[in-house]
Length: 423
Image 1: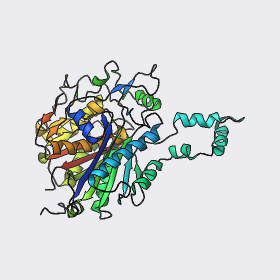
Image 2 (image 1 turned 90 degrees about the vertical axis):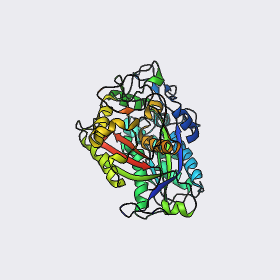
Image 3 (image 1 turned 90 degrees about the horizontal axis):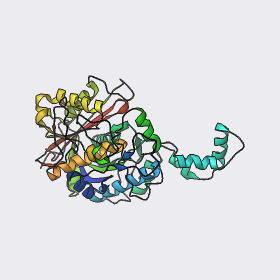
Image 4 (image 1 turned 180 degrees about the vertical axis):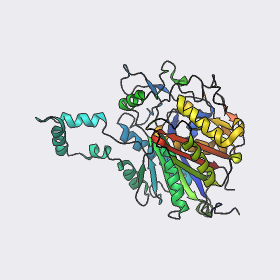
């Protein structure tokens, strides 16, 4: 029987349940079929007017009951859907999970419909006093709850029967990976036998679009939406904002074996590094990303030579793709040219707070299915980025280990090392 502990004597952490929702569909089966077929979920925005905006495309999730009810409502529904799928696959009760919840979700603010509802109540005062007067007289909890950062995790914890204080976190685009890391660490410390880690984001709004546009971070290639996200290509011009969620049931190997659960993969290592260089730009020398990758390998007890595939952060922004290549080539050396690399964001866009969790789920499926999803729109390679990008069509491969990168604004960097088997 395989050892139940890793190279540092910690419990081995495995995955026994996966849940996914993106613009490609609900559930991991539909998502995997679309992803490996090279189908894009990027489309014109219909949720709000875009006539005067530079970017008019996204990967919004428009097929759920909450899709038109604001960011908080949609983020909750995305998290709940993926949680149910993952918990059910793991073989636990979706109303009595019995483990802690770690939720990555977007920063919360009042949606415009809530702001309008406040002002519509009327008052003779103006400015802040008017807003406060109306708010005090509004006997409804929905507005209050929609503006509370921890309310989504709190409600979700109650409905799922999670235990302990539900943790809500936001580490920019690394959030989903951070949620997984927190679950891994809780199991390693012996605080629980299982944990539920979720990354969910339903926050594509006009304001979000404008803010990212002001940073020159979004693609403006609106005419053919499905071709706008083109990671590592010479003609890339920015990321495509998107929505989605990914959920993993994490469990100690000992617990999974004792109850006869199917092990879907192993969380071998987690690395993180903060970068205080700039609020949005990456440090030019890539040192925080390099340190993050090295920390993940060290935590996993593995060398760069043991990584068979990299699921890249691959945002399709000029600077971030260049920095990611720098980090990989520095750590892997010449070997990086022979390691297949792909970016799921070429098809689903950048799901922000959810990205790390969604891409971890796809990384696990890549190893289980022996198929690497392509990076679509890779027709004009950037000669400055010398990587084995899997171009346009899926590739069959025996992948036993994967590195999944998440490098976020504000210097939030996280990296996960996953393997197919415990040993």
